[in-house]
Length: 131
Image (cartoon, rainbow, N blue to C red; front, side, top):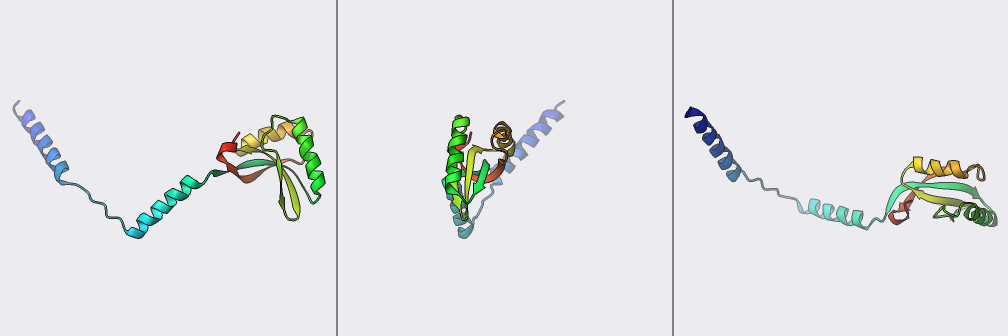
């Protein structure tokens, strides 16, 4: 009977002494530390994420894209982030800000009776704009 407490005490003594004397010291190179700090700063400052928008149309006619934008806004007033952008030579009408492609497809199905050419397109989305 006396043997069990002695073994338990010995085990605890070895464990405690081992943990006291075994301290690990991490030495970090200066360039690695600088890189990690820069990585942290870049991630904190990036206010956008990779997401999805619906590309409703693309045309070389600016007035056409503006008319379609007004039509889209009047037919779907709850659809946010409706705007056009110019990427030479096209004017692209885009709408929404979605975290996943599936979310974008749900809205695409709703607007497809009026805008048959709409499709989900990858884009950088402001974190504040996510629907």
